[in-house]
Length: 64
Image (cartoon, rainbow, N blue to C red; front, side, top):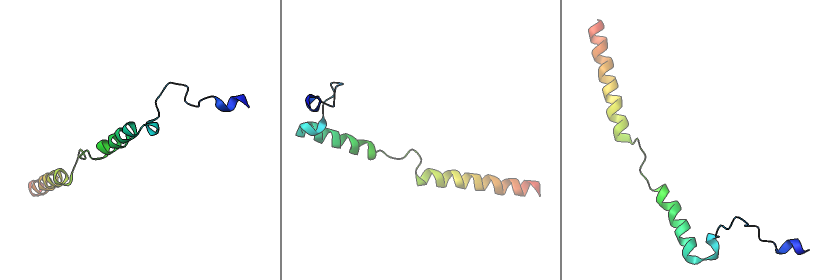
């Protein structure tokens, strides 16, 4: 019965749910990571695709 009073968090980490300010910082930290822009967006893919298509057309004309 005495084992029930032993804290589960023995690594001395603070629980963000125990403090409102810490919890808000924890939630906002997750939002900041999710709002980052993707490294490759549609415009970059369109430009690369157009360049590849142009090179393929030029190569086909040269081969003929």
